Image 1 (tube, rainbow, N blue to C red):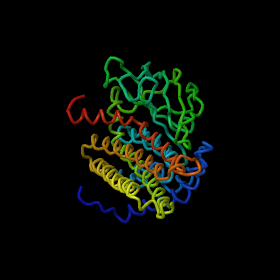
Image 2: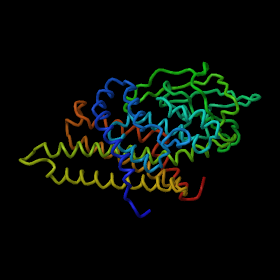
Image 3: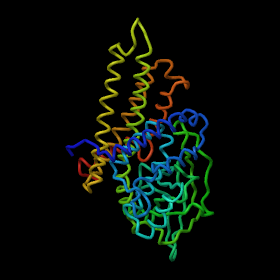
Image 4: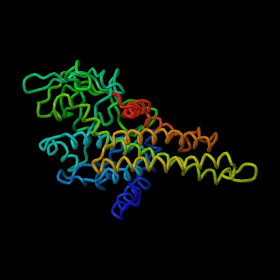
Amino acid sequence: MTDFKISDEQKQYQQLARDFAQKEVAPEAGRLDHSGEFPTPLYKKAWELGLMNVLIPEEYGGLGLKVLEACLISEEMGAGCTGFGAALEANNLAAAALIVAGNEEQKKRFLQPLTQELSFAAFCLDERTAGSDLFDLKCTATRVGDEYVIQGQKLCVTNGVTARWHCVIACTNPEAEHEGLTAFIVPAENENIATGRKLSLLGHRASDSRNLTFQGVKVPAEFRIGEEGEGLAICTKAFKLTRPLMGSAAVGLARSAMEHAIRYAKERNTFGTPIANHQAVGFMLADMAKDIEAARLLCWQAAWLADNGLPGTREAAIARTFAVDMAMKVAIDAVQVFGGYGYSCEYPVEKLMRDAKMMQIQHGTSTLQKAAIGRLMAGVH
């Protein structure tokens, strides 16, 4: 990948997302963080503009954007509010599982409705004893005739109450380890799904995360995605598409934190000069800029590999991990630039710090990603 120039069409997607994020989302971010409100009207506007479900192919009503184009959109949404963007990411991840492994009937039945009206999907993976350790999933799916019976609990499910359908990863063969996991589409209206209360989170408060309990939920065999035992492979393929997007959202968050820090550093005076002129502050701003640029390029590289059908599991994990860790550091340094004001809820950077912490945890913690990258480099499983 040697040409880093984005096309005029890609710039249009980027500008559309930037205008929406800065004019519609960012002004509401603080209020939503305090209220915890799920901003349905904002999602309606995003859906109408074509900023949701951007990876869904054109034949199912979507834009069929490349991963790189989706990264451009994700960065702008992250700059507006990653809490708002969390619901979009959940849709993209659930859809990605069907995009990479669903059959034609499944795609028509479950992807197409996401493009016909505002609706949500959820990806159900994490459990009380598993998430980072996929081989310890306790949620089971047992074949009974032409149906599967799903039993167990999933934790911290983004879009847990708003989703029209869930992509559930469950264990169909406890003895088979990585070949014992299977993916399923589970319609949300099933009466045997118990939805918990909205979780009170440190960050991402505009999103809606809940625990779901599957109490003998029956789903027809045709709702299985792929074959039995392909759940881990489907997750890996889906993550290859969506991890660059999460990394890009983290880049957007860090960019926002840096811009707040720069403005404040130019306005705040100590010892007769703006604090931006102090070397200690200048070094922090410089580190922010260089790390943001590096993270963006890593995300674009991972996206380019995915778009060209090249191996990129390691690169996607590297991009996501570097970007979210970078966002955490930039947000902490932005708080430091603001000094005592940075610790106040009256200023925006403390929210960005809380949101960045969430990004280090969701969809596979940074420590898990580093362990996985190390295994890939060493050629071990």
